[in-house]
Length: 346
Image (cartoon, rainbow, N blue to C red):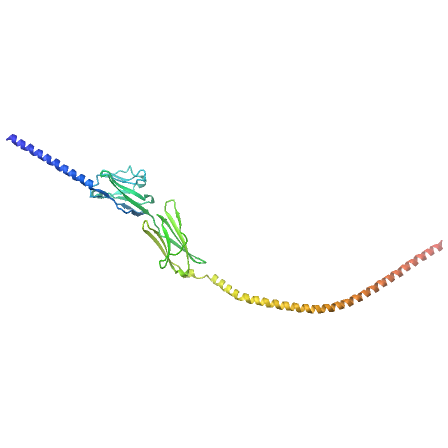
């Protein structure tokens, strides 16, 4: 009896062990089956984030698996080192992380058991843009999430009066990627503006500016719109131009009045000057005719006076010659008398 009992006991133990091995094999087979079927799922569309914000790069296992004790790798293949975050044996392995992501990446620890292996990236930078690989080494499964980084700011508009109307200047800084700028009137119609000027700074951000000159016929309400389609971001600045900017300044009005008055008075001035010159010409002609008559009379008088004068001169000349002759005769007589006197004395 004892031997039979021992045999039955041994047979029972052997059967229990066999069952344990069987169920263990079944469990492992189920685990392997689950692992074989699980996929690393990420969104098909890029994830968009603005500079300075926090962003989540979604990644999860389907069917759900507990990933807490598994290895999870997030990496950027274009970087060296390429790792953004490594989760190993229930904790983060920080030694392999790229320095630019230090203190900015994490996983949702409480969600790992539910197969959520998403990456949280804090304080996004322009340099963070790119493809991020979510990799499960134990499953040999990987998928890539594309991150698009954007930066926006509100435009600033200035108004200046000029000769042709009002000059509107719009500027918007710190944009990424490069945006487009448009001018719209009050009804939403595009205005023909000068080409947009674009400048990229050392931080990789863009500054855009544009100018347009508007007149009163365009209305008083306008909009400067800056848009970036890739990140689906738009910023606008609405403005209303005061009426006085469309009015002519007082100096212009005064100048216009003076100009009109000049146009009216110039013909009158020309006519007056013409009449005055005509009158002056007639007076000069009359004086010339009168002068001709007087000149003929003066010629006659002059002729007569010339003749009389000639006669007087001749008479005076003859008288002087006569006096000289008399004087010379006296001198000669005196000399002769002296000679005679001298002879007699001898």
